[in-house]
Image 1 (spheres, rainbow, N blue to C red):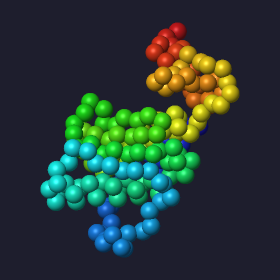
Image 2: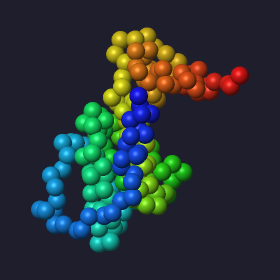
Image 3: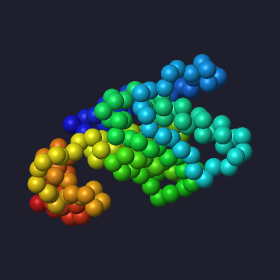
Length: 167
């Protein structure tokens, strides 16, 4: 199911993007019901950086508004880092970090964001409640057997660190 959701989001959000004309803050559409925090790290106070941050926030808020609430509700913090990193994005159950200098376009920004949001859905929304502990973990937290993700993980993995061999 998670792969179907991600495929749908990629197909509908990553179509060629044509930026809307600039609007004043008062003219922008109301923001989504998402209550998380967007922060910017490692930017200067130069006006060009301020414009870039505002543009990126608008692009991400637009994307968030298009997504089902149960996908975005677990996301509490979104960090935009003005740096280059081996990973374009990182996520946990409630936080996404996007390394902007490793991302080349608005389309790629949305793609990386949606990929990372898939981890948020997996770790923050699809959670087991009363199953037994499995060999899979999210950091120090065990993933329980009634978590829907366990079936997906088990396709390719026998445990958190051991990939299945193809026989």
